Length: 184
Length: 129
Image (cartoon, rainbow over all chains, first blue to last red; front, side, top):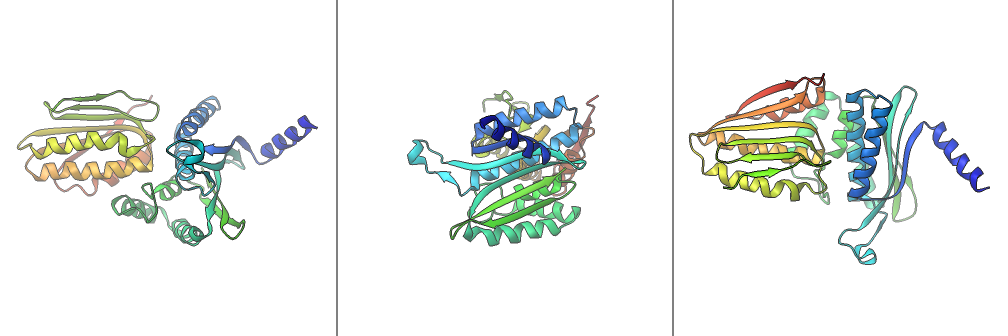
């Protein structure tokens, strides 16, 4: 039974083309470790170097988004650390002739509208539009409540040569589940 | 000012600031855990140094293979700082070195350089073989 379940899970992942999957707390140490593993994996598979760079870059932005923004977290006082731990799911894979980097995490309901409109705006932009927004965001002030440069999504969109998709699913009154998949 | 020499790690670039020679270089990959902690102190030193320079030849080499979006924000500020130094009467040259087949890094270099009004800018394609 134990092996059956795990084998079924492995089959599900393979069916979706997933070659790498992580679910758990995302920390900077985890980012370093998985990052090196992904680099190694792409080297072994002889992925085109520039494609590998885009995949890696999207991976970094996705994971740093989870580390900074995931609403599913353990408060610092419980783990006795300065920073809280944030939870997310990450998959990297290859299907239908394109690579994908997919990431999911809980977000607060009050942030959903802002994320939707910002991602919708980015999705509608062409290459030049993305370039302009990238620069504007780098120069301007980071959006309210943002702990990073606020330019991560634009960077993902610029590198996702086959585009990106995002989706939200309501969980309860307080949270929604947010997922973003970028294609290279 | 004491020279700054920091070795590269998995996630942060090599930093080589020679204040006496006005020769500065940042090389490698840049996606540090904490961008502010990494770049804050060294760029403060650089700014303090540059404000005291007059008629100096200043050369800044950027040889980045990859950087994340938080680093991009820092680079934007660095370009502004260097452009100011040039505006204040120094001869400032920024050299952007990128891997020859890396169109993204080439484009990013051009984009950062677009706003320079006083500093000189050079692109250098590195043969990766």
